[in-house]
Length: 195
Image (cartoon, rainbow, N blue to C red; front, side):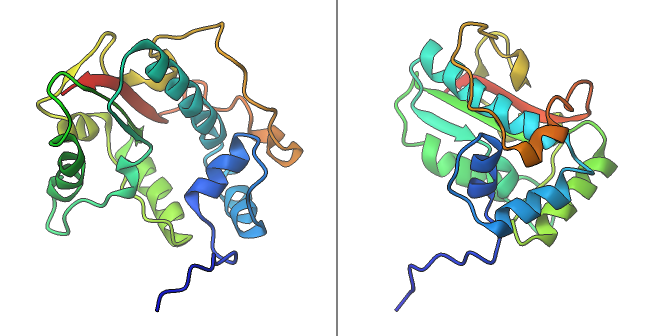
């Protein structure tokens, strides 16, 4: 029999993400994980908040059938190299969507593969599966799909809407990391694509 009990001693990416959004459902392991990660990768706070704002814009501007937001970086590539494992997982979902449907997709990427690997290793070390990719590798994962304007871009640049609702304030412990994504080579790459 499988236990449904949540292990609160291990960090979880969804709870850590929620804390960065200003939500309250998290545990000390999630907060400790972020407070150890953010000094080296402070842009993660802004990336998480920009991701939530991208979600708002993506689903309010197009009918979307599949949301593949912040999923790809948790799907490991094949041990022998290549994107087949992550691509197979993606296609297991989108192959069942109606032709002409849309997918909103995003993944944290890094223009510097060495820094991207260090970032992924820091997350893996906390027990959270992570696959670092470059923008080109994420684009290859979506090969065969047609991006809508403006294409695949840094998610903060995808159809900005100054009128969209603001997110809750961040926890005071996270304030030192706010606004640190400007000019970073670590960001979330995203777009809406037609299937």
